[in-house]
Image (cartoon, rainbow over all chains, first blue to last red):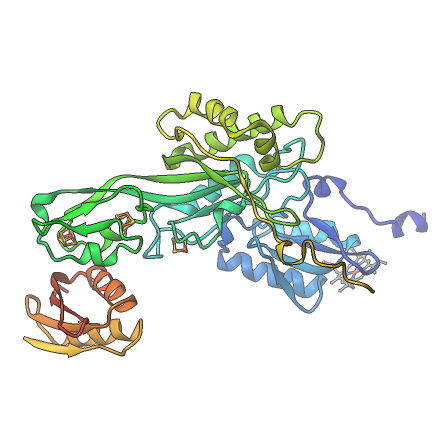
Length: 323
Length: 75
Ligand code: HEM
Ligand code: SF4
Ligand code: SF4
Ligand code: SF4
């Protein structure tokens, strides 16, 4: 009877989606928390601090993908940790071959560059797709509010980047030249008539012209997400390539769902393989066609496969290092 | 119209100085700001617009700096 009591009673259901990571030390685990978009309500932060103080080590770790990780949690305390965090509606994150917690920058609410509500999108994706098994490998999503792209969206399986298509009302222009001065890629020049001329190719859809124009002569014709697919980092990095432009914000979940369905089908029988490698193998046209059926207005006419970043260039062909 | 020389003043100090100068004025009053090329001329006008002031024009000076004319907005 005594033995029975000393055996840890752990609800293994808590471990299903992952988020509990074995540490070097005996019995100790890192508990990765679910923080979509990196937004943390202050009362939740207080609760996390309380739980970390009670069960964890002397610090927490702020992870690269915006999680707070509790360090040195004894596995016997999993239930208590989950239950106490739950009092502030704080949940544990996902690991393994699943849709991970989405990353996002602050977006447009208080950041002057933001063009779209990245926080809303991240929360929606987290609510609808968090922990969904992919059948193959991890699946990462990120949201950047504008083409500055602080979250490096194209290094994710699906990366969303806020974008604005500008339109000029010539009549409202006072020929101040501020837009041409502000357009970093040099897409705007001032014409003979002292009115701006837009060259589409260099335009990166940042919206700076709209933001600076004193009269509202430049306005948004369209806003939404430019979507890059097939990115990842790690040992064999890939940069995702453009598959859709100006995807309406409300279609984000459906779009990811469409990509996941294609990934599951094409990766069938291939084990642990990332989406980007499947696109390289199958060619991007198949995925473009698949997505075009559902998103005819957003999917681009053509694209290239995810781009390999060779991180070992400087040492290739050099005499091997001798121990 | 007063001119404030913000050349050599980096972001965001140049914007804060412009803001303080505008606080001394009445809505509808105008002010000229002398700005460096680069970050300053890109950021200061946009931030002033965000604060509700009216941008009236931008001129390149003979020295290659920029002269921005602003009208103070309503409080
Ligand atoms: C990292 C070192 C540890 C710390 C900081 C720690 C801290 C705590 C705290 C604060 C509680 C009280 C929880 C509560 O009543 O709300 C607790 C309970 C408990 N601890 Fe630990 N503990 C540690 C290691 C261990 C180890 C190594 C074991 C097992 C060999 C263990 C087994 C237990 C058990 C069985 C309980 C009772 C759980 C319950 O009330 O349901 N702890 N611990
Ligand atoms: S990506 Fe754009 S909106 Fe997001 S933090 Fe960077 S600059 Fe701001
Ligand atoms: S959206 Fe950006 S890149 Fe395009 S014209 Fe406007 S300022 Fe230039
Ligand atoms: S910023 Fe606006 S008003 Fe000034 S030149 Fe450009 S379009 Fe015309």
